[in-house]
Image 1: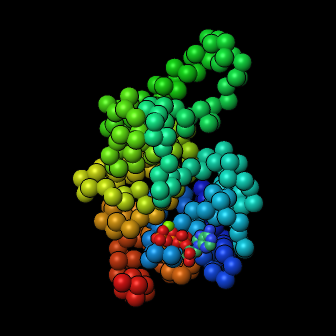
Image 2: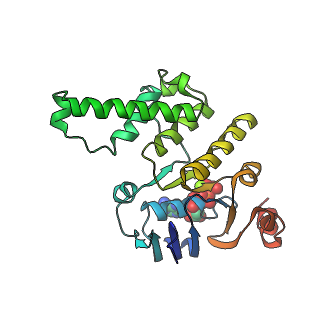
Image 3: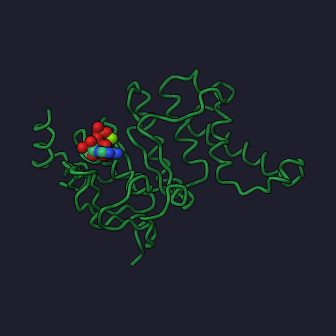
Length: 255
Ligand SMILES: Nc1ncnc2c1ncn2[C@@H]1O[C@H](COP(=O)(O)OP(=O)(O)OP(=O)(O)O)[C@@H](O)[C@H]1O
Ligand SMILES: [Mg+2]
């Protein structure tokens, strides 16, 4: 049996008296899109923080391709190819779109600083390759024409696209998207849905997607995991989840 890309077993996270996650297990395969839904405070962002090392586990384990990653520092987990976008963005507003994407690439490129400083041919080649790669991804998202604009001058939807380009610039095996559709107009949402699908199906990226926009979830998710008060109450196909009584009650109960 091959190992899943990521596997959580019995993961718990506590903040003082609050159980943000209680015994949550789930798996995600390469090329799979799994949506994580649930009412406010259900533990969705805590799940991402647990996977990316931003909060310590109080119990359980997180494995990437079969190897434990819980207990590692966030930058160590990121270096293993676990990339995320944040609920509240995080672009450099004064830098151009292209520069923002290059920043994501350079965080990963192991260039020799001296050869870069001296402008040696190898370093120049690496730089040209990075620019070409950034442009290819901006093309993929349909925002290549914005490459020279400052990130701060873009609309919310355009900024979200740039964040995603930056997150996937290094071809990570695993991408975590925290509410990427917040504040996006419906046509931009559909565009985003199509892109998430392509990243998974064409590039084999495993995607975990936290999202309140249910039509986006239904359009892209292969599987939906539902959290409620830190517990997993459903893990099934979109059709099954839509018909699940416990899920409906979790939402109606909070409405
Ligand atoms: N750093 C923290 N310190 C203390 N409590 C926290 C912390 N992070 C989350 N919590 C608590 O853990 C619970 C789960 O929060 P979390 O942010 O994971 O929920 P969420 O499902 O992402 O909610 P939302 O839909 O509002 O983004 C909440 O009760 C929250 O107040
Ligand atoms: Mg959240």
